[in-house]
Figure 1 (cartoon, rainbow, N blue to C red):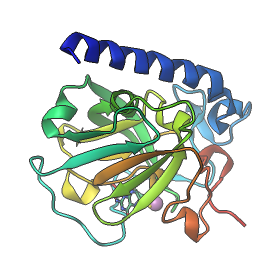
Figure 2: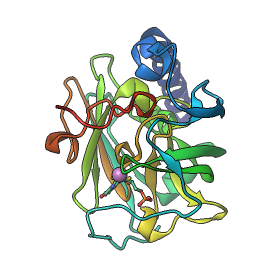
Figure 3: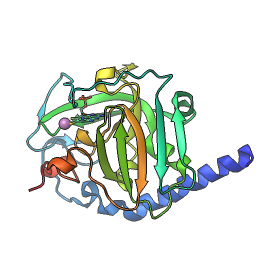
Figure 4: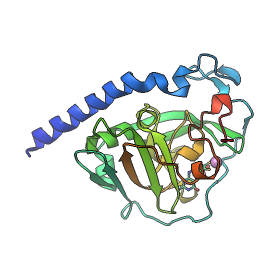
Length: 231
Ligand SMILES: Nc1nc2c(c(=O)[nH]1)N[C@H]1C(S)=C(S)[C@@H](COP(=O)(O)O)O[C@H]1N2
Ligand SMILES: [Mo]
């Protein structure tokens, strides 16, 4: 395949993902919910700034399973596999070949703290997924991390423009404690949906629950309805 053909395939894959996003995104809780709960002025998605039951903290607590893998930018790799035409392994240089974006968003942990206005630098998860050319039957994403953690979201959640593979926060390389060199963030869902030290993403036809989802956490994790746990 020529460079030009490769580029063309990626563009096509992005356009297909974009179309799927608009076809199905109406089902996401964040868009289907006409009166999201919470306090404060609306954020850019129209949800009240502080979701119900949350408090704002200026600190950035560290939450994980206690295993903090030490991975350098040079050894980090992300495998994107499953129901796709072109499984890919992205390394640090491959990541930087994607469009680098700066974004500011809020971070909501299910344990009730929220941190506002985190400055992120990374690439859109949608752009990384497009490289793999997901098939239309691939409807769910299953993330695995270097510490053994796993989590899952519908693919449409992963295509939102604020869902990033992040490598800098507040102007500094993403600290190891917070999932550096590269983690996922999902600002419109509780933060456990964002895998620190992300290692692989499997595109799946059927949903598969991750670490916390298997242990009683909500599968959908939508903060503006306190969608924290399953009964
Ligand atoms: N790999 C990995 N990612 C993870 C976790 C984890 O234990 N391992 N914890 C999740 C939880 S419960 C939260 S609230 C956020 C916390 O991110 P922070 O430690 O940067 O605040 O990471 C999420 N991602
Ligand atoms: Mo969490």
